[in-house]
Image (tube, rainbow, N blue to C red):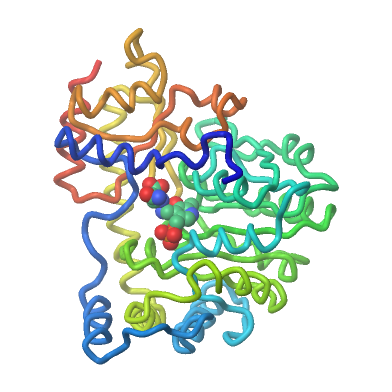
Length: 390
Ligand code: PMP
Ligand code: GLN
């Protein structure tokens, strides 16, 4: 394995979940819902198992699912895609990211991501042999925003792919139309491809609007959009994701995907096909309940003494643990490892989403991420325990 930077160690999510279990903590670390998605969708998968949809589905995904993904895309972004050539079903967004990075990048190429970044990006870029270059999201005026000068500097002749993630894990930032315009400009300037990870596309709050990068002028031909049913329908263990983009790029990603998993999730595919085709009621219900849970956790963290950035989207809120740092827990990483044993709450340090020793890692060294995709009782338990800090 090419990674010598530690990016392929056991993930911080697995580590913090194990610690949460061992200490009987409220687990606000790993981002997965503790309530399964709609029962009617789960019933379709259960029926599919009993009806015999248990063998390899087509490598690109069953036609009904590709058709639903295309319709969903048209409905939400106005972008028309051909389900037979421009849509690929993958084993979660993770496989789409892996197959795309392996298809398009290799030694000598540079891949640009925002920082902090979802941890899989660093590991997958390392596996491809490319060099990882990052652009800070800076904490300013109560938000995290793209450092525009750093973006212009980071992108150059060797940039092969720019990876964007909006709404953004871990910061909860929903990139603005302006920020996306800037990214589109630099991608076109250096003729780079863009992978846009939009797994939280529906999970935005307070009217914050998610913008699809592929809809920007000049971007359709160079953009691969990645999403996943895991977040949209609270079915993260099904691992039904997809990549959508121009036929030649989807062809190249498919060529890699066939040797990663070939195909998967036979009984889940018809269920997600129906879920996507059914309209947006379930999605809106999840979004509204998440907005309430975000408000609950934000006020609990503030009452406990944390400074934080109110997220416009995702499952996550980032908070500055500075008031609680000590010789025993001098930074966010030590604080996150101490917290389960001390008060019975798990979170994850933002440094886990940064390159070791980077400028962003040091700027956000005291920050941690809490998830609010948990039931209200778990959130209230966590808030009560956090109020004992200090
Ligand atoms: N991208 C981001 C930004 C994520 O937060 C996650 C996981 N929650 C993934 C990709 C992986 O998605 P999947 O489980 O569909 O592979
Ligand atoms: N994406 C989830 C998170 O950010 C975790 C997924 C995982 O455990 N790899 O918490």
